Image (cartoon, rainbow, N blue to C red; front, side, top):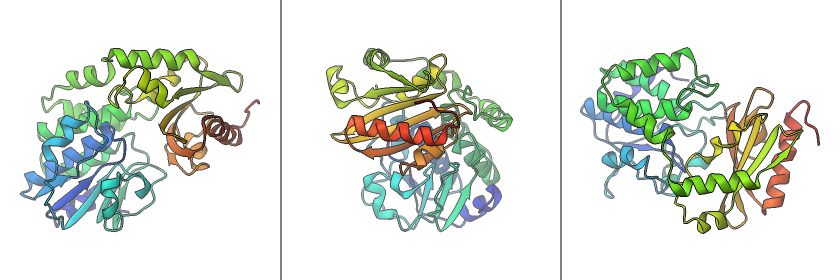
Length: 318
């Protein structure tokens, strides 16, 4: 496993680099990729990001300025914040067997790169990318803004339990470059569209409770998305909603991707390991935040995730 310094040294030998982000991209994967691309270009390297079809209105501005042209042929391929090849977007699958360097922070990381740099204790992959870029040269405001987005979004604006003193030190160093961090926090954490508010209202109205009301299940069927005419931008990070309910220490958000396919996002407190729950269904992630995909109807998908929670929780009550 490479250290940040060793990763920086390896990157110095790379050129004509293509950087990959994961399916349904969030601020961490996109922010890391954009910052790394800027860092490589600062060294005089040719580097691009593979376009991601799942970009939202909030993540697109970070990736699009670095998007690879259609005729770009990479010599090296790097992935950021991707735990498994199964999380590659469809257009990234041709590179599944040729990732030269994988940079990640998930405990469930599957070591698919020829070289791997992983820090499971990091709250965000952006923390590791920061240390790598700092070893390559000065952190510019261009890099810092993307990295701040990566770190702030993966920690819920530093409110999640994964936040560490190192997380705050990285954020402080990024802020000291003069970036407009206030706009980042406003956009990601204090702004919601009307359609988003309608989605949340419907989810809360129909949510179900289990395990003495400690487990909440919220659903987002395709019919709800169609009913309010919601876009992917409106549905971004809906998994954070359930964990805000008093008394709930395990929130499951079930998002219907297509008929018979549900994306399950699990957010937990210390009583239940979310990664263990999702691993039982072929997924993974962190102890407090993980996900998996289940091919079944709604009732069966819910039954499977509740069974996985019951197997993991020491005191689950039917």
